[in-house]
Length: 188
Image 1: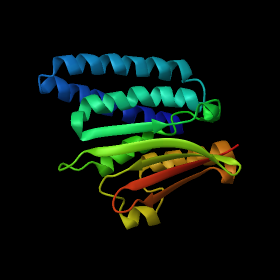
Image 2: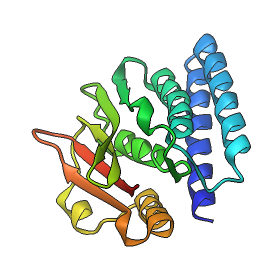
Image 3: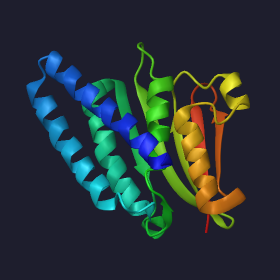
């Protein structure tokens, strides 16, 4: 049920982005976006019965999602993904990273400058850490104090708790001089 609350939000945002491209007369970009969305839906349907997936599958899904974001925002959005091959077999809750990227875009994008999002995974002690870091306008202190404040953040936090117990965590922190870092901790 928690996963079902996230997926419609993502799908509506993607369809709105495609509609925006059509309205702007960007036929080629809209056509490309429809193809990318189709690929995403195929992956989601293929893995839809699974409540978890490998980090590698999650990253394949994210690459397609991030491609849609580049089409939607053009030069206003850039990203970098760094996930070692050795971690790609790790099982994690399905679609756990995408809502955090969507959150970074929604709350970090500024009209005056491009947003850059870094997604990386690494081992630390007896856990794998997945970080989503942006250089946007930053997270307000009130949101930090009330984590999880947003609907997507609450879902991610709860899904981590259900999958890993108290050892799975979602943390948000400001990134200086500006931006936000979301950190998911997945015990091995």
